[in-house]
Image (cartoon, rainbow, N blue to C red; front, side, top):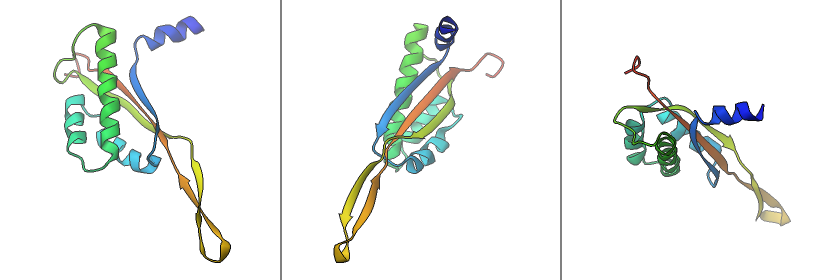
Length: 127
């Protein structure tokens, strides 16, 4: 079973960024923008997006592209790679207290998330 999993991982190309100090909801807006896109178009979209989370998604996407290039021992051609899967999971939540009137305390939840991007090459039929 372990050998089968190891062989399957040789054909999957992904990158993950863990414990990003942004709420998962904000990160999912950016992830939805680029889901299924060709990587060069996705990089351009992320580069000129005004949301702060787009910088982190761009970082992970560049890492996923580099992982694909390293496993295949060649550079990715223009229009060859696309984002096959992208998902944002909830990370650890830091719980803090803010002073409130009359001796109370309001709870502050500082959320974090994990971003994972899978890239894949288009086959000749899809081109």
